Length: 294
Image (cartoon, rainbow, N blue to C red; front, side, top):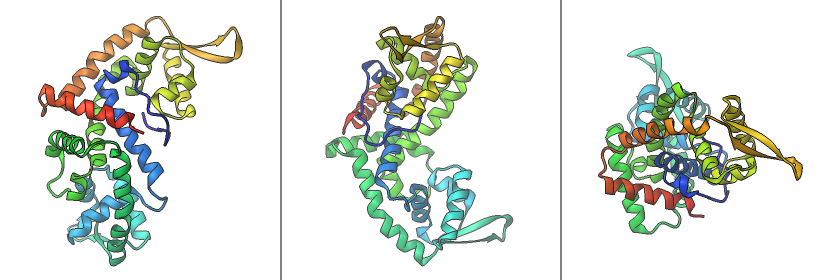
């Protein structure tokens, strides 16, 4: 869903805590919120990952670097251009493929990686604050068991040891798969959580929903607009206060939700096939704790 408000209260409705896909998204949203609130403006987490990956002295194409640090080609193109402009990497034409570039880290890039490491360590500490050492170890081991086989062989150890990085790698393919199976229903992944919350709690205001999902009010307005345009929710003004609006499910919304929930469950189950049922529940329990910690 994205757009999590940094520092927002971490509310997790029981009905949403029972949706593994929502739990994984909320964990990813917490990582994204921490990145926004902890890292200085001049420190880009993808740029840091790229500098770390280039620390072995091996020149990499942008395509190879994208695979190594698990980001899209579009992202690595932006990152590479910024790093080159700042003198942190050297970018030259690939003699084996003149359409691509080879990247190497400069001395300034090595210094930046060392300097930024402190901020990235602060970020990781903010994400896992409140977990006991054993819980951190368990969460890391379970995440790595799921996403480790998908990581490139040359993925830096600094990334493999990062819970924030692994949570993101758990979430991103799952969200893509979930979006694909929901498309025939005219829904997107965040819509399922919103419909679930409204069914569980009854009519709610947009501000209440924004608080429950820890997103900005403006972002919630956009999501509600999407559901309203699909005929699944409607805004109604309160008789006692015509300035206030609450959201109601429209006829057909619950049926659509009942069609979507098994699809969501199948996507998550497929994502967690490397874990036993007990391990999957342990992972989700630790992610729930991660979400609700201050």
